Length: 101
Image 1 (cartoon, rainbow, N blue to C red):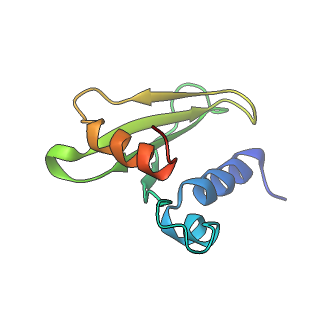
Image 2 (image 1 turned 90 degrees about the vertical axis):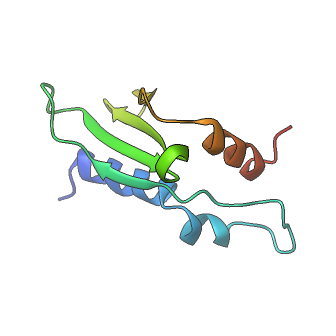
């Protein structure tokens, strides 16, 4: 039996896995769509065992962006920027990937 936590991990892993899944969904010939490959690791369990906490990062060195994703259940969670990381490059790349202006 797959637990709710395992299902959330698999779903989030598929959503954030970067190039492998996202590139396959890109329309053919659309050179403006780009996938963002994120590194995602599960954080140690905190005081609430029902909360799944993940650390996601993008980039390296001075341009690295880190954020924490906390999932309380299937429809509630938090997405927090980690102080000290630099989101500018990530936001620029996300803007391009979403074809935003």
